Image 1: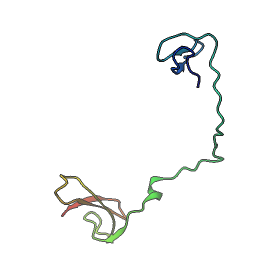
Image 2: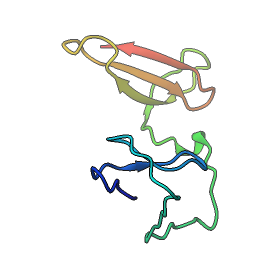
Image 3: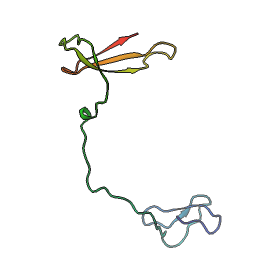
Image 4: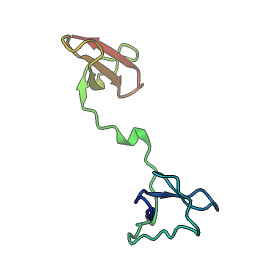
Length: 103
């Protein structure tokens, strides 16, 4: 990053244009010399993870209203005002039907 010799403001450059001070608008001659001492780590490979493999919800024994299977994942969420109880959501472990239960 380079700074203006007149006011000390940061110099900005767009494409091949001469750098301009962001504070006073003074146009400097030449181009900016940008250097970085940080090394950027580039990953050797990228892994793609399916959302279904990330499912970490607990399983409870409850009957699915759709397929009557006895296991479902559950999670809770505040869907109404903060002074009311939270809503519990269920998702069947077999057919993936989702339903909710208010407390």
